Picture 1 (cartoon, rainbow, N blue to C red):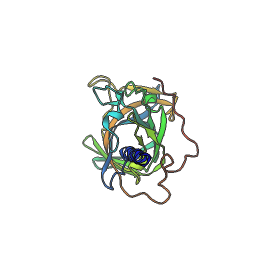
Picture 2 (cartoon, helix red, strand yellow; picture 1 turned 120 degrees about the vertical axis):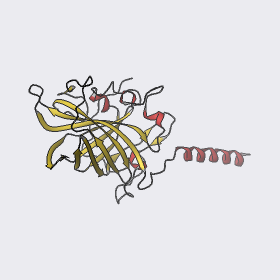
Picture 3 (cartoon, rainbow, N blue to C red; picture 1 turned 135 degrees about the vertical axis):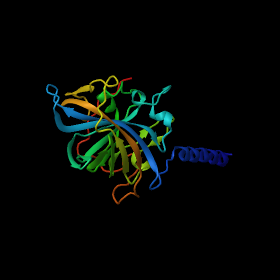
Picture 4 (cartoon, helix red, strand yellow; picture 1 turned 180 degrees about the vertical axis):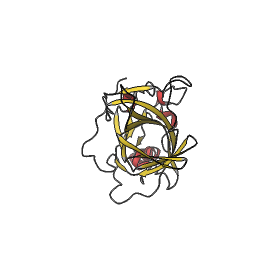
Length: 265
């Protein structure tokens, strides 16, 4: 009887482990969908561009994580105001060159900080700190990116590895880890409207956001105008030596872990 009981216990434990196990996304397969706003810095008084910016993003899809756990419970619209897994960019510099009727905009190499905050969500795109709150669950190192703009539409592609990731627990008890899902890093293909600034009303003046202070990882230190972008990200390769790690210890610990604002219910 004891042997049979222990067999049942082992089977139950194995079933639980299998249920919680997450497989890596195959090489070349889409692992994330990214929706974001780029915050291009401007002087708060003169509105002149500073040449620097940051961004906030959320994820309507991540392979391996059920969609309902990417948004707050009961959300009727899956957008930034309901997102519980979000990210922010470190500050990057902008420069541009032209090739006849094509404008090429370069964004310097940056880091993307992923945060999980199941008890809070950003109010909207103007709530920049709402995107950099809670548990730091990943740092994605992004190479320099080139956006090519033609007829008002901008296209870019960028790739890089995870330099840090940490386990986090979903509401169903499933433990997940972004680097375990995409061990080769991420390659993102992005469509943006670099020539179109977000306005509060259709055809109105560009909406200006005050980002002079911040309680989270990134403080732009100026005002900013917003540019929309989105695109899919896929797993470009198998993990390189030294990148894979045990659950909760994937990648290497950053020298100085970014601070995040405290999440409130």
